[in-house]
Image 1: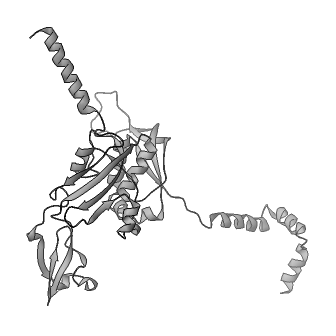
Image 2: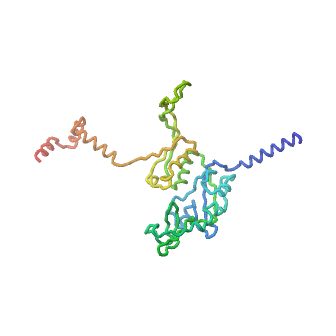
Image 3: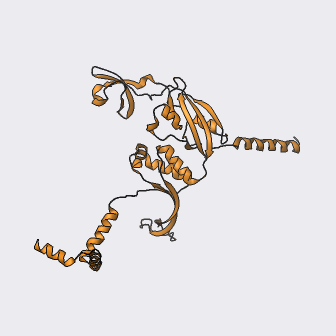
Length: 315
């Protein structure tokens, strides 16, 4: 093979690699709008469109707005990720997610008969959703003392069609963090990133190779910089089931994806603190160093302090 042919082959391979890597790739933060429905029955599965949510009567069941996902992280079904990978901002399309990848194939063995007494009394009716022995299911029938419960996902066996549009990429790290939290917890929170200087205990490395292995390790306090994501806590966050059950995993994923050192949830309490503080100052002034200030205030208000004392003594 001539040198010219070899050069052409190398150039073609380089062009092919460039084409393969063009467009959106794993690790990109993508703002996405989509609506998912079952192929059979046209049942709404999920949507980011508030108008569709209102039409379906589910607008009060969460936040309906474009979502931020990270390609390659499983934030959306694999078939949808594959369709988006390599596309550009503004692209749209439709992809069918097979039942096995969506909510699983329907399994007849997951329909079981159990004692009616295992079901809470308020849930003993067909259609009720129940949690039994760590599994979630819905009651099909209750006959006598037995109940038939289907532990399949309600959408098991259903292919799902996703219609999507790539709205934008997200480059700002605070916007990335806010988008991830909204996607994971279905709630919007105020977030910001800042670098803090904190004290940390670090192990002191010994220079003595002959040091006794059983000796106590030595530590020293050093100041280190920590790039920190702050999350403003809200009552909605404290009651969020996903957050309560998986806050450690959520924080770890955010720090990994955004290359942060830590996540701090900050709670601001507004209440009687300011009022009590002010009252404390006034009460302290009555019998302490601030007494002169209190007397001056009484004079300004045209109140005779001696008369007040006399009246209290008479009572």
